[in-house]
Image 1 (cartoon, rainbow, N blue to C red):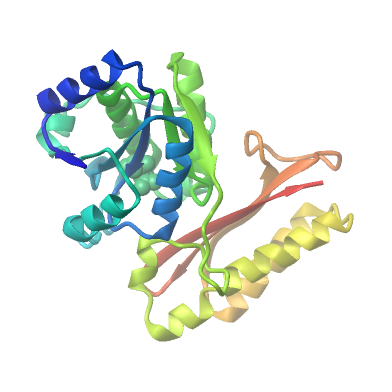
Image 2 (image 1 turned 60 degrees about the horizontal axis):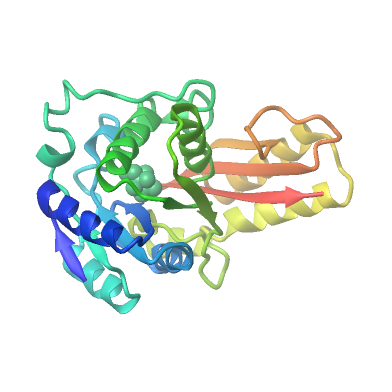
Length: 282
Ligand code: PAF
């Protein structure tokens, strides 16, 4: 497994793979890898002969006052983990490599329409940072396939839209959310939870599941379901940012006949901001 920091070494390796007609999959991450990331790498491996995992804590997607400084940086442990799942390359670019003109003068990519609501409204500028860095990673690695997790539901939709809108020849694959045994979606930010908060956190998935069951059983008053779910979360002690039932395809407001819905939740619990979702196909 190669660990590469620099663009030239990256290009040489990619050229070598291309010479052998090998397809390349990319798994962009910010490191601090857990079983959820490992599942992305395993899925990537099913779609390409070569798998590149990128590890970069991207400053442009953190707003003022967010956890950029505190975000866990665990590269040595991440390397060992990736070695075990047979990763071909870890690309660990520096800020200078990814943003050669500096963060202030960086060309930025915006995906209007899908980024204003939900996480976009609670984290202003977040999705511009994500699309800007992912576009750069795509430009450098030129992958055939890219894998993202469903836990960041809005993010994967935004990236799909960016790729389609820019006509990038990259197949975007969304991998199912990996959960702890008690249902909590795996996330690097779970590490911010105290023992007491950690014991509360599975409630998020429980609430999503029960709203999902209500939808499956024919309930169609979306607002009532959202309010009930939000109330249950607040009563448990979460600070609710949003609970929303939307059309899975594009996050638009669904009508009664919509047969693929996504239930999205974002809450704050102590120092952590947690998001989760489930897709309900009727
Ligand atoms: O999902 C993440 O970890 C990040 O948003 C990503 C896609 C690696 C971009 O920095």
